[in-house]
Image: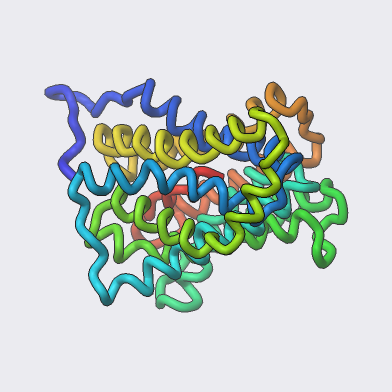
Length: 308
């Protein structure tokens, strides 16, 4: 990626419209999922969503002449699609049957913390004392949020499913890092989404059957969910990162959860409980502490699965 554009003698200017599109589109995914689950089961919803996205991604990959995955990288792309798209969406969609959109986005916000822990345990990275303090704070926030959801963190509860989705998001971030270095962020995302659509293909007929006879509204929901968070969100985010750089742009990702809470209120009339709001603040505070001061050299927040 080229160096960030900046005016002479000053910091780079933030492109506000692309930033609003990226954050707004990613945040909208959580309430949109809640609305779509009225008509579709969790896995068929994911299958239809990414099949529709694939119809637009393939022409984009051809038009941009994106590099084809090398043979040695195909298993990693399939693993990214299987874990970061298919399994993630199964867990998130299942969790959102009972967990509010706002609470789900706050629980998913723990993914950077989980990615750091996985890196420490399996990749030889280290955390400073403040990093471990931030980890404990984040975990306390997760417990607070989960305690306010139906079933808490009992086995099979919605909160455990969403937390499992956060684990998938963390693993996905680590799995795709070498692919981004070789193919670039947007082509890697596109290939991963296609891989996810391929893994979900067996559930596509079931999804189409569930949509049949339901009228136009669920089709509109699926179309928006397919195109806006994934394609529009990542394209807009690329503009932001291209202007201000990865490190500077990563801080804007903290706007995702609050934006989700606002959109969920207007789209689904969800009013977050005080426990959810307090837990969310604790989670984001702990993650921020860990990201800023948790490693010998600061590491920016990973790109979210984004689309929710």
